[in-house]
Length: 154
Image: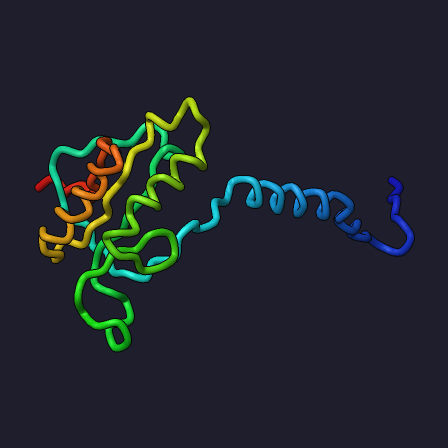
């Protein structure tokens, strides 16, 4: 009976890390392609009201948003509800120019499909919302959407 022994005992082979940079770059590219950067920084507080009948918007690229609510920094801007267009406060009179600029930024084919979404805080009085709707009517923006959150079923 004979025994075979290896000289030097068992050695564990090192794990190959040659493919690790490829995996890291593949993950990096994946997140860079799939991540959407925030387009608008909110300067008004918008706590959306809840609703039972909610529909999803098909083409979100054809939606322009108008935010209405009390300012986030109430120490500086007060507590009265304000309108936010893009990243700044606006008055009711600036809504027409905003909608016209939004239309001009779209393709000519899609201009008729532009929807204006109103994101209004649930504690805002209806008067400012009515003023916004009147301005939208003057410029011919009749496709209006009210953003809500879906009510949880009890």
